[in-house]
Image (cartoon, rainbow, N blue to C red; front, side, top):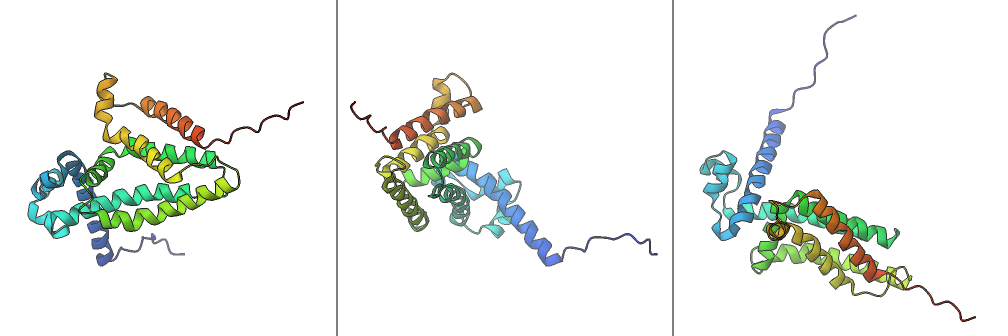
Length: 225
């Protein structure tokens, strides 16, 4: 009986290069999102991102030839995560209140864990979405319409009160994203260096209560005896 040790098959060189490139591009994008959030698109330089990533400018430009291509990658990743939460919202077979509660929780978690990403996206939108407007329109609008259709089915079935679903979602976006985009102001008001998990938990309770109150169905009046 052979006692030779079994060894894992070697990873092909081409595949290894692809894996390494993907890893490095992800690391560059992670540094870029913070710089774009702090400096804006116009104020960000490839040289600054490269220095933060521990690369030369020429090396970084091998992976991202222009600042716009790097900005596009950053916003693509932000929007991917943002839309994943919208896809989970359109679950018409579930309890609308639990779906909305989970949605608010997910949006606040994104603001708490990835504030730089939220700020980059907000800055692009506030500036008129000149560089990323087409992607937002082509990817956000279809999902928004899908979610609105689910709200309309819930309303027709009497599961929630009649509500303007579009503006309800706008309100949820504004309330949850403000805890990333305006966290510095909130921390100043609360007299601390940064928001804590308790602050986000408190925000979740308030926002969920407000949203559920907006969609609650009034109790049927008792028959007069």
